[in-house]
Image 1: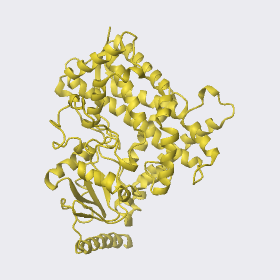
Image 2: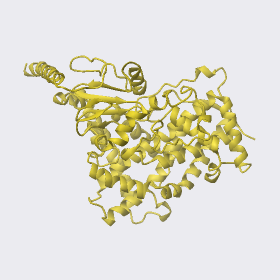
Image 3: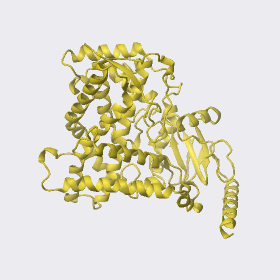
Image 4: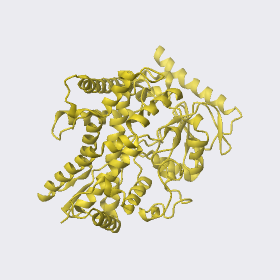
Length: 495
């Protein structure tokens, strides 16, 4: 009886608080009306947030407000409003909210992506930018990238010789996971090995938790319901499984008898930095585990997704496919593969990559932010503790900046100074400002080399009976937007 009374009184209290807020003299952005208690949660589509936000922009403009439970939400999706959030007022918008899953999996924000304290974020970002993901470090990983690409090409050659349909989505995920395993852990994830299947299982579990609904995030007063639904138990199991995985890998690196040939990966660097004690905080094993979450989730997911989206658009645009293949093959010649050195000369390939990042960004909505204090954008008041989403998918298709924005056209980037490094706010695949993705260099390097060799080595066709219009672009829910249905193509070895 007491529980029923509690469940009845809590919604009444929330409604009363919301009514009192409405009476305050705030000029909030426009937005759709929500239902009592749940707000706009029933309308939100987590599998396609960029589409949902884009449709609302047609009615309410480039900045609008929503409510997820008791939490105010603001969405910005124009170059001008994005610049306010990511650059002009970056200090007020660079905080991460305390979401149950992200805080638990990141060891209470000890990682880079979900760090809450700005002072701590500066220090941990310095570790990543200077020691882990610098241009010099990314260049040092080139032999690993090249070897993993050649392994993938060899596997496709075997399958194509047997006239098998190639599941490119699966092969690219295998490439990305093996690549990041060697880069971060110093070991390759074998195709049939138990470690690889375990790695993929952990990756899938983590992604599921990042997009899972928790009452505690939007209805703090009834967050205990997460335990009744079993969601909290699933989160705890995912955390413990990941923790055991990290522990095993780190202990392996601490083994004094570990072969020197396996040394020099990201964990080695972090363990060396831990010994130096040169930071304002003590770099613990938990810090290293938290950073591994960012590296293996972001490093695997985005690389695979971007190549899949590029190949999807190229198979739908055969003229573009032929043009980029001719450029690659003329440059690489007859040596049988594309090297890192070849990439510097491939202007049209770079245009294809930029156009893919514009047209199908791996993360179409940047990781959510939270305001620290009251501020103003475009004359609208943004209150403290407001969740802020930046929809870069819509920004990349804004007709104010892009001619024929809904057409895949790499030529738009030829001779253009527009780049993805956070200075051009109409093109933000990696974000901008303090929270810009530090793994940009590594991600693009993996993307370029894998795509170039796929296009160099094979002629790609649709399976028999399949038409161009049959290729779907539906997405799976997640921080990274993967193609929902695998990209399956026929490959013929290029003579």
